[in-house]
Amino acid sequence: MTVLSPLLFVGQFYLEPFNLRAETSVEIAATDQEQGIMVKGNLDTLVLKNQFWVMVIESKQAIFSTEAGLAQILAYMLGNPNPEKPSFGLITNGGSFIFIKLVKGVTSQYVISDLFGVGNRQNNLYDVLKILKKLIQISIS
Image (tube, rainbow, N blue to C red; front, side, top):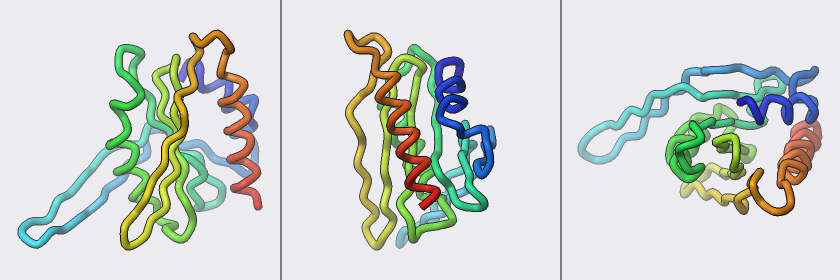
């Protein structure tokens, strides 16, 4: 969050009409033919506009790869109470960033972005900020 928080500030996610919530609890229940499966967890950061989930953010320690949080963030994104609109997510470990888009349906589908890194020859923080600003535009329209 040390790297991400200033990006959220510059991207105006701390201003109206957005609301950031940290450590938001999510429960997802999935049943199969033999047993029910319950997944419980806490979202690291949830960006809301009214009751609409703009973005789910999963932060990992720097020693973990961003891919380590993929299953976890997808489970959280499946808990979005507004299934008619796509869900957007971001996984970061402070040095790398991956964006996720999830479309819920009979068979839910997701896509992940390229890996954006602070250590690349071109500092990808500008690209991360551009994507965050694009998410603002999508959520306002």
